[in-house]
Image 1 (cartoon, rainbow, N blue to C red):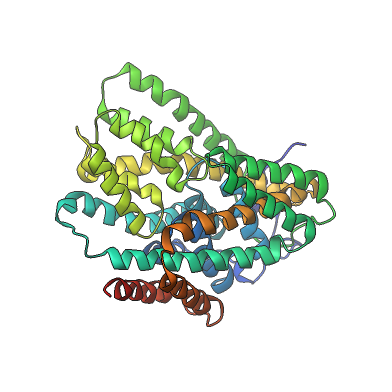
Image 2 (cartoon, helix red, strand yellow):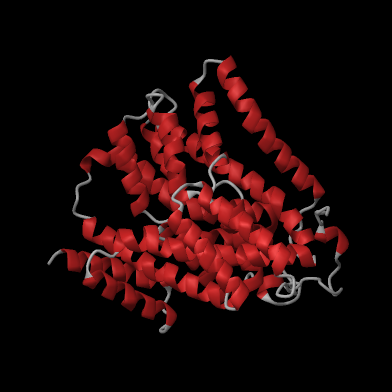
Length: 419
């Protein structure tokens, strides 16, 4: 089956069936709007890439209604299926739906900038930061349990609440909990898609969402071609010239291009690039990794810290900017190249059946992540579990804003840690 990218701007006129409606999901937004919302998420989305799915769903689906549940689930599945920073790629895709290609860049910049700035500052002042913030950091880990639990529950209700898809979700969770390798997630997603394509055609529904992407065949060719040229050409250039900027670009680009699942999975790739080559000492590497887990936003901004402290030059702010762009660029190119294919394929029954299987597998992956690493790293005693329950109630029952729940939970964690 050939998947044909669709340039919606060229094929759908306002007022025709399938054209954008007056709902938020169909309305084009401004770059300032996309950047502002992403910036707020970048300042408040603690807990890593799995927790980010919960924050994004609350903001983009529930609160602002920029995308509907079906579109959001599809975009989650696409971003999880590609190498790169999955939560950032999800944000890029939603920004692109809202405001075109510039919207994708605005969404990335807003979500990434806060943690990148914090980690650059940490790189300059790491020697002066003590352990006084441990209680606050622990509270942030605990509230991430509530955020992920709500995301799992909400997505399971719409994506895995019947017997076939529920069974598939549980099977994916078992795979993730039993097979502790980076390949486990890839196998679970591909397996879910295959099972869905074979067995879930009756459950597959053709989406009626009015979300549209004004990207076409040229975007697929340019993004795919540029990704391939950089992936193949940078190592050749690195071995042809003696230039540290080229070395850094190649190392961080390949780290972003070859990791499935994002987040913590990128750690060994970065370690082999910067520590093994003598750019960053092991103790500084581990200190920055700890800081990256404590700040909101994507874990891939750890690259900004590494670019700040590495030797030789470029380092400082220029090194941080180079490393940051290089590690995120593969995910952006892959996601922008995949979105037109997804747009054209999502109405086909076979593709929808496969996506139904992938979505159920994603629920299982989230369920496994809720236990490990989210809960296992946060719940140390009964008071931690009580705080997680209170945060869950605040989010699910009282419908309080996530940023407020994060602040209160962090303060409560600090208070508990003081006694």
